[in-house]
Amino acid sequence: MRTVDLGGLSVSAQGLGCMGRSEFYGAPDWDESISTIHRALDLGVTFLDTADVYGSGHNEVLVGRAIHDRRDQVQLATKFGIDRSSGERATWKIRGERAYVKQACESSLLRLGVDHIDLYYIHRPPQTAEVEETIGAMAELVEAGKVRYLGVSEFDSDLLRRAYAVHPIAAVQSEYSIFTRDPETTVLAAMQELGVGLVPFSPLGRGFLTNTVDRTAIGESDMRSRMPRFAGEAGEANQAIVDAVGSIAAARGVPAAQIAIAWVYAQQRRLGVAVAPIPGTKRVKWLEQNVGAVDLELTADELAILDPLSDQVVGPRY
Image (tube, rainbow, N blue to C red):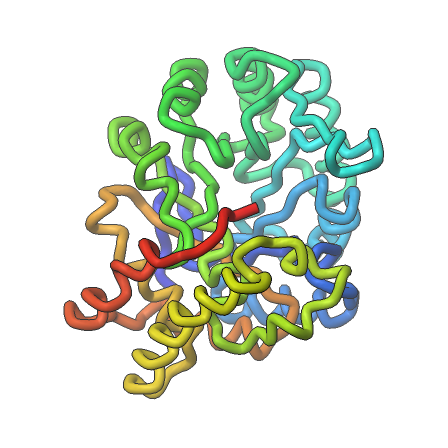
């Protein structure tokens, strides 16, 4: 597995998003999740992504158990900020006060069973503090040796510049795929100026671009059942995008997922920033399939078909 440099942090070119192992995408399976993480490390996928909000801490515990005897192989990323203690999702807050940041980090270290975090993100722009206070507190964690590098998630250019003025930012994590290219217009300019890398989550359009998801069979425990792009007429319209990806995949004799991830890699030169996608999966077979995209190069003709597809997407992200 080749590596990518995110603001000085060397990570595997493909990471592994671990969220679905705890909630949001159907029932979790502890043993299968552990096995998938172990297989990822064996394949050189060593950039693992979690967050304190996933399963209300469950996911960090799971990841920590999976890597307890292989910590030196892993670039460990986690996130803080989404406070779900109020109960209903509509009332969750994005917190960033100095004391909260410090406590969140201590709690994550405890659940993960590690003495430091390689890449520590604020999960969304803070609502309870100015970004300077939040990043300042995160910088103190770096000074204390508890965190190595800082990241932000779903920031725009203005917020990224304000954050970077307090402390260097290694990466922006945002949704990015053939389905969703928002970072190109919201934050890319600042990333290019500052040399900040992009960590795309959901590079497979939350599984839609794999051409293996039956939209009519998605259960209520799966967050996609409430996502506009999967439902009704929008879902039917977006199937045309999936079909286009599938046609290229069939012609190449590879899974559609590999074409979708390879498209993300193909954007790196045009974007002018380092790119390390973190597709998420709970199963070894899909992990192994995703890894095959790392060395898959798309032709100019294939890109000419794929690039305009994002303009055809129907429905908002959430």
